[in-house]
Structure formats: structure tokens, C-alpha cells
Image (cartoon, rainbow, N blue to C red; front, side, top):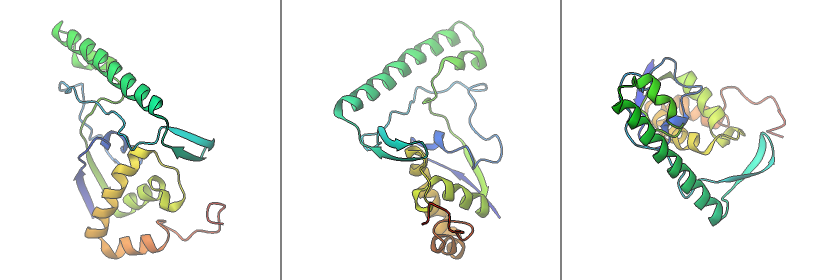
Length: 175
């Protein structure tokens, strides 16, 4: 059984890798994208301490928060104006979209089966010992809730197994 799911909220741009099984994202090639941009929320940790793949996220300072908000917003506005100027000049959408930053919001439809979803949750939630990107966890937990409602027996077995598909074989994360 597979499920089609539309994800609301500002984090959905961050989830395609590892979950979407076909090209289902809204394309700026075929329609004009709206002026909606992701700006990291106040609760988004800004800094990391420790070595790669084994680090902790920290909230950051008020000054760092100001820098992030002003840079994200300033670049988004400048890019949006450039995009609009190009479209107004008759430039094709697929060319004009090249100036838009990665935080430009789009929509997508997810298609997955239970195994794909469990793989995603295993890698994109801290319960199994991974270090996922903040925004991905903001999508992963509602997906886990969806899974627990529509496949409660499978979800319970998955959760009882430490949010893993297979029992851990004593890897260093579980020691």
C-alpha cells in the first residue's frame, strides 16, 4: 500500500531527499512561483558544536539570529525583484527562476510506502541516533504521527525497535 500526502508548513522544501519516489514538486519552469520564502523560526538552532556527524545544535545569540533573519530576508527580496523584472521582460520562467534562492517555497506531493517511510524516519529523527536537519524533523514528526494512525501495528513495532527497521547490531551509536 502506498500513500499520497501533501505536507503543509514552512519545512516541506527540506524533505524530498530520501522520501519522494517521483518528480512531484511544483516546478518554477511551468508556473510563476509566489513570493513566499522560508526564514528560520526563532526556535531553530543556529550553531553547532562538535565534529561533523557527531555534533550538537545550539540556539545561537541574539546577534546571530538578527544576522540570519536580515540576510535571508534581504536576499529573498532582492532575488524576487530580479525574478519579477525578468518575467516582465518576457524571459522564460525556467530561465528567470535561476535567481531565486533555495528558501523559495514550493509545494510537493509525497508518495511512499511503509518501508520507505520507516527508512526516512530512521534517518531523519534523532530517536535512532541520527543528526537530522532541524527542518526535516519538523516534517518527520507529523509523518510519524500519520504513520501511527494509519498503520498502528507497524508503527508500534518500529518504535519498539528504537525507530529502526532492523534490530541494532551493537553499533557505536547504541553502545
